[in-house]
Length: 276
Image (tube, rainbow, N blue to C red; front, side, top):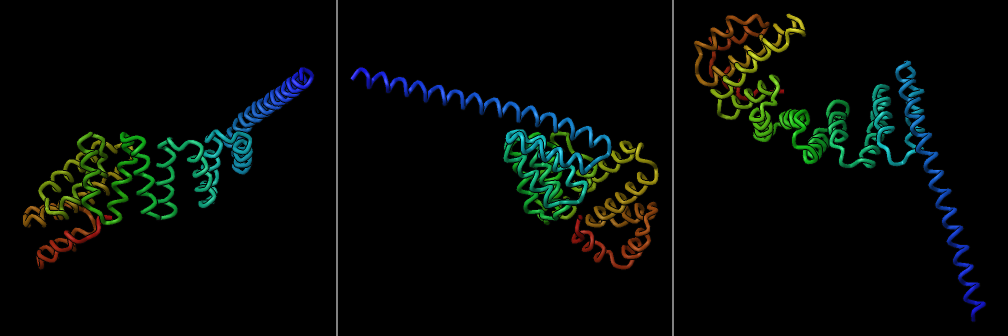
């Protein structure tokens, strides 16, 4: 019996030593793999800076295979594929990054941007933006983009709620404030709409000097037409005429003629035109 017990103990000890050696080997292999992944990430950056986009993509792919946990290589792969207009592959790479780091709100924002700009899948983009905001309610850029998506889908009340939240937090852009004003005009609050657009116009006039006068003038002139719409919806035709008369927009003369001949048709147009 003692001999059998000794033999069993020896066997257990041998199995333990083999298991320990195997574990050490696995850990050493993993450490080497992670080290090589970091080297490929560095190579990826060098190649990108040097203008070798394909080489950088290959390095990012290798880094992602060597390190099954780090989302950074897949994020880099996403950018490189996107620059080559390989949209579906870029989306797949980004989904892989999300799987590795599902709590990173910025990945969901990137996915939503891709779904809006390249895929025109606004339902999926809305879901992605909402996921980003569930992880980071202070992601103001994502909230602005969500409001714009809702606006494009014709869900004015929901878009209004998002823009109002941004406004109340003082994080709304002048473009967002302009859109909010246009929503007010179309949802029965034209006075509030006029105020919001007027503030957006002032912000645009003061905040984009560095973009150049032609762009500034074009933006401000387009906001004048929005102000005219808000005034017409209120029935303030005389003031609308003054705004249109001062506008250098190519559309202003036609709108003036419509206001003079059929103000009710102008009002219907202002209420029913798409904001986007």
